[in-house]
Amino acid sequence: MGMPEIPSNLQERLRAAKSVAVLSGSGISAESGVPTFRDAQTGMWARYSPEDLATPQAFQRNPRMVWEWYQWRRQLVLEAQPNSGHLAIAAMEGRFAGFRLVTQNVDGLHQRAGSSRVLELHGNIFRNLCFREGIELDELVESIEPPPRCPHCGGPVRPGVVWFGESLSGKVFEESLRACTDADVLLVVGTSGLVHPAAGLPAHAKASGTFVVEVNPESTPISGLADVVLRDKAGPALTSLLEALP
Image (tube, rainbow, N blue to C red; front, side):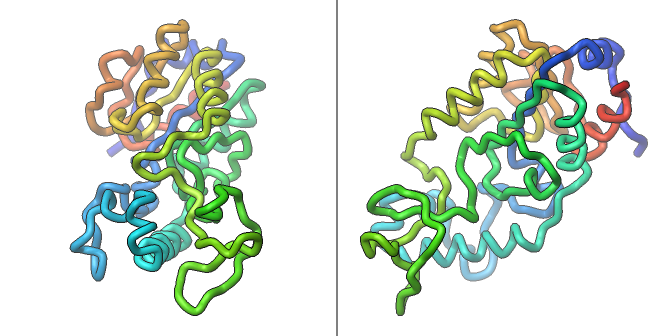
């Protein structure tokens, strides 16, 4: 299969754009072999659903199990490498004076690809928080039984991600909303458009006059409002898009 063709109206919009935003979801990470959050679990985790493990209540019931599941997920991410889609987005950052990347992903692959202007809506799996105090921790105290403990209060340590039933950081969401609505062009890459409030960002951008582009091999709720749809995976579509820039 050849590289996807970039419509002329999109090329013109990008050439005239001073600010570009990207909203990325799990689809781009899946191209690096990172299972999407709702993919079936494997091995010893096959009998659990993510919803059984990614909540504050689950952590309170069985902190060791939740911690070990996230350690397993961290190892999966460490074994993955950024793909051509991640690399193309990182290269775009240097092409536009106003560029922001808003991601629903927690795996850090964008940063490993070279992106620096990143807003992480759902946190980062490699950060650690004190479950009691909610503060980010650089140092952990190992305990006889996982998880490790907070060096300040002795409370259990949790991964620095947003769980089901938790609110996004208000500051990060406001910055993300501003990035999408202020952009001349918004690229919506590999997101299902089902997880709110992130799923509402493209609609807010469209209402503000932003030119919205969806990059996804599957139809999503975002497809109907997009000005252009590139029905392909992130890697080939974004590589073609980058090559079409002046």
